Image (cartoon, rainbow, N blue to C red; front, side, top):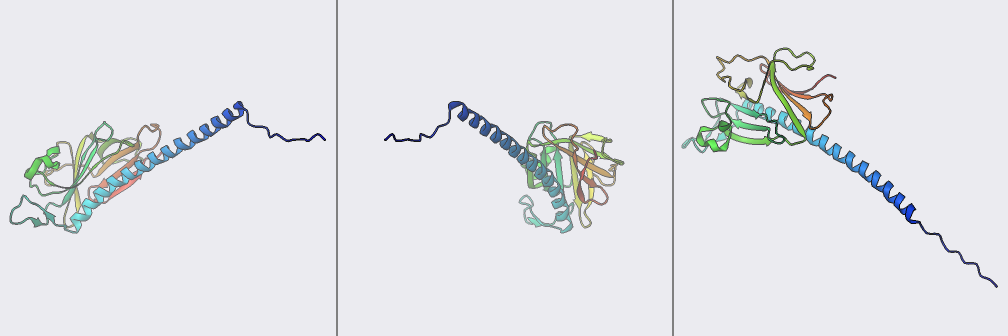
Length: 227
């Protein structure tokens, strides 16, 4: 008697190649979407980090937080009468835009980097925290203006350095850009200050985000550009 045997048919090389190509395409799409989502998260976090540093400086001023100043021998612990602030240095180079939360212990306020740098020694303000904007975020501008109704056009001055100082007890903000003096009696500054951010390598048509500080109210907030 003849015995029938069943031999299962295997995959051909072409079929295997097709399956591998399909898996590769799906994996590539998933990886790109994941990387894009991570970059978006890092960008959002960076904007909130800047906002948080400004809020922290304001909160420190309101709460009259004491500092430890090793340069002030005999009176190392004290509350800085000039409050706390944030120094901002904008750079076109990715990853080099710098934000410094500092205790305002210097009697003379200048918008110079060495006053907000440890290399300044006892001639610098006391650095509480330092943050560099990651490459996922473009820091487009820092501007002062009186009227920005829809944020579609940034008017006023566009500069590369700024200082925001919150003085106790009400933590009203003193804002200066570039070489403007920080003497509150002589300071002529407009009411609103904007830091403009957009995700790196994003389409120019994508709306920007702004960290907005009102000089009088002082409390920072995030605003989005209207499309």
